Every structure is written in structure tokens, then in C-alpha cells.
Image (cartoon, rainbow, N blue to C red; front, side, top):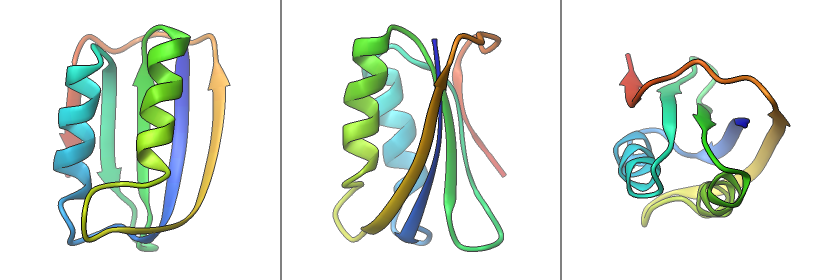
Length: 88
């Protein structure tokens, strides 16, 4: 199963991507996280639904220093990733 999420707020310059990658790896998820030019962060994660839901809850709060104002997300049945990366 796949989760595609966009996180809005103060989410760039606060180690959001690095922390997101660490959480995803700890949960056994694959996918990626990247900054978007509009100031948001995008993450795509794949794995079991319960782990994706735990990941989503973490993304709604983010790391210390982040202020998450809004999240847009959707689940789908796609699967293509083998690991979890930060894209630049």
C-alpha cells in the first residue's frame, strides 16, 4: 500500500526530511521525501497500512522545530520502491 502526503507549514530548514527518512526506515517503509519549491514537503511511503498510518500521524506533527499547519494525503494500492530516500 502507498501513502502520498504533502506537509505544509514551517517544514523546510528544520531537518524534516532527515527525520522523516529515519522514521520511515524505523517503520520498515520504502519511498522518498523531498522539499517542494512552494515551501512544503512531499513524502511517498509504501508498506503495511498500519505502519503507513503511524507514519502519517508522525508527519502531522513533524520533528522539533517544525510547525505543521496542514497535511493533504491519499492512500493507494501502488508499490514500486525498494528503499527510502531523500530526493534533492
